[in-house]
Image (tube, rainbow, N blue to C red; front, side):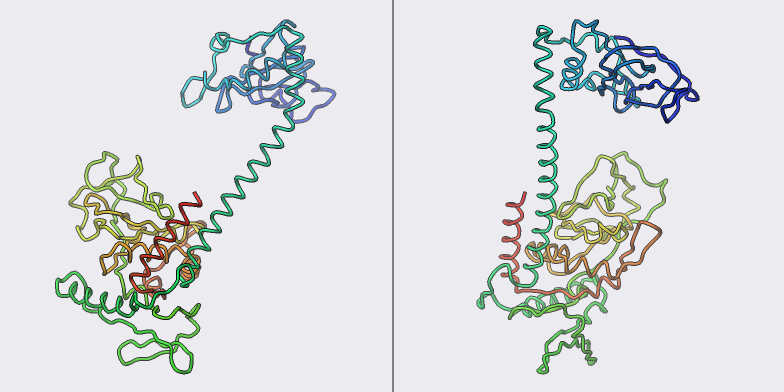
Length: 414
């Protein structure tokens, strides 16, 4: 085995011609054409430098091998195609040095053991491989296509499940489970208590009441003002459900703002979660999370059980990513480009239902409709406009059954 020789880039041409008839072969295969050659024959070529070091190619005739190409000369004792297929299966990249620019030393390749059948059997093995390889590649393409289809189909099924759930079609309604109005009244009482404790502004008590009139139209009453909102209502609800505004059941606020130089990666202080920590239905703690000193963070924005997090500034495809906080996180908050949606009623099933609701196609479409584009790639979701979202709310006990059914179906789709 021997590496080729360096050649000036000025001597390599993109197209073959009478003046430049010889292939110039580098570590990743053909680099171009040149007017000189340094190798002649039929050889396996091993790439020895870069991200693709260890890759295999076959070259025949006269060609120029560069310093990044190792020519495997078996002197007709071993079939070049046998070497090519064996090294391909072996994955020579595993012998590369683990550096910023991976490299594969010729001495390392020379130490590799090769099972050596007789030459005639090598030819039979190569013939059988080349007979089966097209079938393997066809199967690989079919399997990759099936995997892609399964991912896409599962994603569509999840969306359909969430949409059916929030329209009251995933589980049956049971009269004895009460009314959504009772839940909304319970939330109102919780808000009153929060106002008394100084944790909520009095203005938050100004609830709207949404109802369907005798004329089959929908109305919203805030104080003494009544407005028709029929055009805002996307679908009719089952008996016992109610429409309400997002702002009437929660507080929405962003996390910590800070200067870049104030953040560290020392894992000391308060962990700051960002948009990249949020996946659909999952909150991820990452090794590259940043931290701020505790005295830089207000206690009110530390994460609490049942909080729901979503990016306030994100790419179009990530609008509506939602994750729920499963337990109190007294040493963690979010950055200034992430919303914390904190429900006034502390109940895990209510929180899980709202998570599913906010993750539904219905709500994602709404969030996309209220965004403002920021630059070329990012979209801002306005807090005030988000707070006006209309939510279909079932009775609390039914929410429990809905969430349990969603979790069951999602588990089957994994």
